[in-house]
Amino acid sequence: MLNEIQEHYGYVPMDVQKELSEFLKIPMAEIYGVVTFYSRFSLEPQGKYKVSVCLGTACFVKGSQKIMDRLVDRLKIEPGQTTKDGLFTIEQTRCVGACGLAPVFTLNGEVYGKATVQKLDQVLDEIMEKEKKL
Image 1: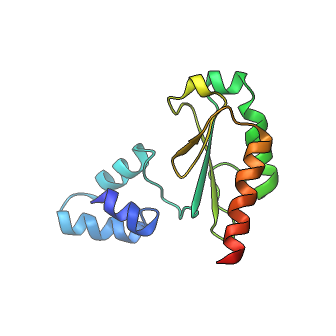
Image 2: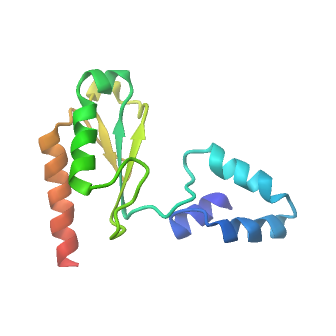
Image 3: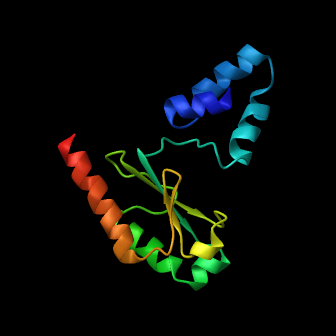
């Protein structure tokens, strides 16, 4: 049920957690505990595009911090935040299981390996141009 809520709203709102608690007849604390334990769930609205930068050892050594710094500079938000227009959410992760492609960032789950600041800029530019046309 929590997966479906996350998919529908893009996060798990507190009022929906309360409704679920009443419906399932289980304490709100149990639902909140699950939501806050698993990184799959969010308590805040997420952007249309979720950009995650891997800061695990292999990626970090190969320069992923530069990619994160560029992302923060371009979008003017910090990891864990969403842009005011609701388009982008930045996340940092410790490993996406693609160490051989380090450094890595993902966009809505799609992996971009051997990433560079230039590749990040290209991807962001394409999205921003596409969104202008919508």
